[in-house]
Length: 220
Image (tube, rainbow, N blue to C red; front, side, top):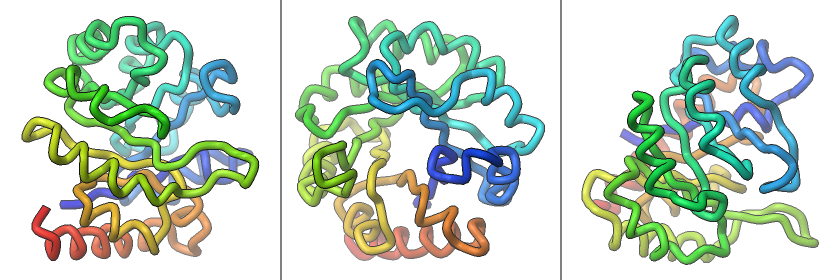
């Protein structure tokens, strides 16, 4: 089964609770937590995650784009987050961070910026249940999907141990989603493509079916 993870950071930030409720039936919600240091943007922090629990019972996953990811783990666990991805680039000791997430009772994930070779994730892939590949980055032309990401997904699929999922995040659209699924991705984080729809939950089901069909046809 291919999963679409709706990214709350790409919704109407002035009405986060309402936006979370719009995708409740999807069962999943993706939270980008940015501190303005590791990443240029600032989204929201653990206190906002705590408040979201009044609006959704979805399974929450957090993508920590922060300089000190380990300091967030227990608090996010207490607020109902079930999966956490920490960046290889921000962790002095990635093994320790991944083990800390697992010991807290959550699924550990390892995130990689677009510039980071996917082979650098391999030494830690036995500790991570998933690797989140960023498929874009900020540049002078805006934030757009990088087509070379397809090769990165294929390479990671070849190198990663069995059972390690591949998640993709960044500029994923209905057009490139089937290509990413066929390359070996298991989950895709999508924001505007979901929340711009009149019925975001229905849109998620459509996109998941599209990706699953492409994945089945490719036999990845």
